Image 1 (cartoon, rainbow, N blue to C red):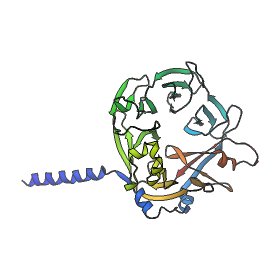
Image 2: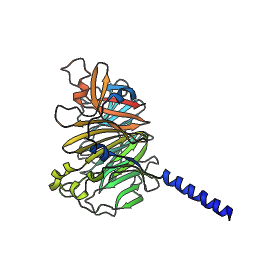
Image 3: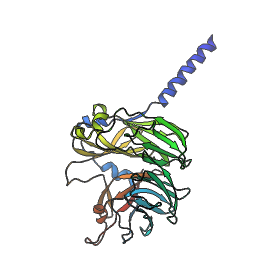
Image 4: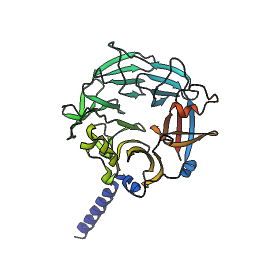
Length: 364
């Protein structure tokens, strides 16, 4: 009997510990806004943020970038893209190296880049061409076309560590699954039965995947899920918006877009193991939040309300302050792509034209 009581006590203790371990980490965004939603002083940034590199990207006739997005850094090269082309630059000097520009109607071409994913192991970039409903694969070594996969309903996708793809199917489509894991050849490995109960009105929304430290995540209904490569979603972080969490029937109806301002919407996450950057719209303003995940503490907040306001984090580069916001993280190093206005501040010739610049930093 004594052994039974002891075993029961140990089982209860183990269950309690397991329950504590399974408690979802939460960032109290709603609570922080009820406290006034004020901007948080940036003195913390000066102590914690360590800039590792600022590299202006070379501007040539062949490397004239539009709005640029970070893809990856591999073998001392930055890979960035706009909606038409993919570019490689030397990460230390910014020298333009090569590009993939296959815009056209041909069988090896694409019309635009809705999404893309890069497999550093095979040096292959895969491009989602939504108008053609296809995914094209190219070698980043020589730009060679490697093949095409049909993508009738896919609006976002990402490469997993095991080389398979995870994809999201359009919310306006009637296919059985909304999230799928498949081989690059299109063979289904796993699928989640469609969950949305509201059909978008007036446009086709996309739900992007997030790559952080080589793992792939999916953000939905205020919860961040890690993609399980064998199939499944593992919840890892909850963004608590309280009563400001936007209902689907408001978010996905263009006729009700004015009502969005009553809620938090359009949130985008970029995160490492310890810190989470969140941008979102609320009350006709854009919020830039930096949170410590383990302590659920708001470390920094910048609010963009009018054209004269700055967006993002301030970075001191020499005697110049530039503003940027991270969009990619690898090995707990954050990457920002400075827009033309901010990167132009780094030029000695004020009248010179500039490409974007890439800024790398770590939070100590």
